[in-house]
Image (cartoon, rainbow, N blue to C red):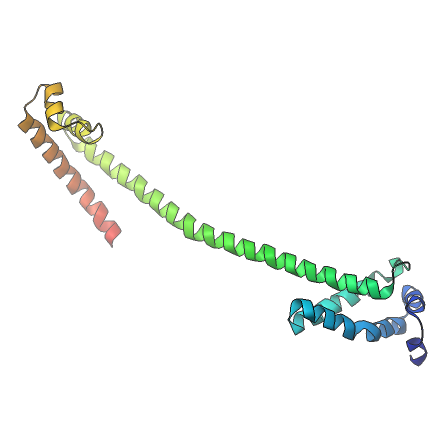
Length: 189
């Protein structure tokens, strides 16, 4: 092992490509401290920096037979560390964006869905109340509430007295209140 310490990076890479475990250990010992400090500066987390270094060395060993000797070992290792860190940052950014989007979907989506369900139920309850009304009362109520006509305009159009229109609208509202009363009590609970 002592003799390996004196070898150049290029010589160590040659031995590494041949599967020499001692050459790998020598490379590890030569650069582990420098790479760790480099990773720690960028990550600001000791455990994460150590994980990055381990991954880089594992990849170096796995891909050793294909290592391009034209690339200086030190530059290769620094670049590998930097790339791993960029991958971490990229995944953290994507993860945080997913979390933000998921929170928005939960916050907006749930309330939108609840509101839509309530709106549909309310419309169904109103329609059921309208179905219970006699035809003339329903016509008067729809002209009053949905067409925005005044009692006087309805009376003139249907050839009725103002008092009859007013009574029919009042009775229609009473029917709807009874029909919708339980609906509103249900949502208040």
